[in-house]
Image (cartoon, rainbow, N blue to C red; front, side, top):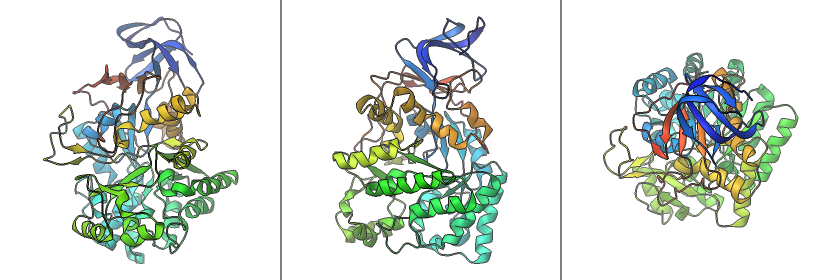
Length: 493
């Protein structure tokens, strides 16, 4: 790497520096100036301020492609998990110009960015959902059947006007919640991919159900993604392939692998948990759909109350009363070796990115000041919002040895950055640790890093990550949040 006799405003000294792109792995100093890495040197660098990283790993900050928890409290939990860039790509948002402006005005501890939202555009056109409403508008409308019907030509044109305007305004692609409107005409999904291909940007898809889960679906969810990739040439990003594939993961990954061999662009992501979280009103959580999949209602747990849904009658009652209520859904048994192997295969698939699918926090009382820290009492959530990346490092590197440390870091940083870096120039400076890269940096202890969040307490921060810098500014120092640090910058298409 680079040696330098220059003095830097900040130096991270004496750590094991790992750059997953170049393969550099040595004890070195990292010099930081003006939000960028000015030097990586095996000889000591002079600096006005120093962070002693002796005995620790220094690597690129983690890039989360799939984070619905975009407010300051949720981003702080992710910062404590090593995340420096948190993007909302699967659900997306519209209009994106307003979302970027709001985030810039409020400030964010992490870098942020958005895709345009096919689902929210449909909700606005077909169901009258507000486009200037709260950030959780998509979640609260997921169970509304009005947006899940086939659109007329005029309605489809209006939907696509929203998408096109957002792409022109800097959206990072198109988020497609196909799994929440599973019986729509497949021609609309094809048209969405064609629009993305024309813009040269990816789609980020929550797949329709697989035929094993819903034999009446018009097209198998996995087959649709790979087929459309081949038909349109669009880059199709397959969101949380672990949760939508579950025990069918080998068939799904086989389809993706064959599609890639034929030259199509399909990337995947996964998170290291056997339970997901979504709105209780989601189409695939209806009593009849659960029964058809052989899933018991008591695998559903309401986040706000901890209630485990007793039976189909109670499920129908809750879905009607509060369809936007967040629930946990256990789709794999993490204590079962066979199910754990399914989960590991999703995470270990070639070039699979680690992504959290972090959800907005559920508050049991009044929503506090967003800058309040420590996190006030009453915050509830899925553990993946606080522990995904530490858990992935622990599981894939330290416990199973399936990946080297550099490979595990790459799945959290370089690989997700590469999903976007061909079409989003800003991402070429992320996921790497070299001269000229953004100073988005994580310092962690490879022997201690671990998640603490659980299904009972989803907001316990990860351990073993003492320092996190975003654009050269510490947002985590000595394992604690820096309360006034809001250095996050927009990532735009």
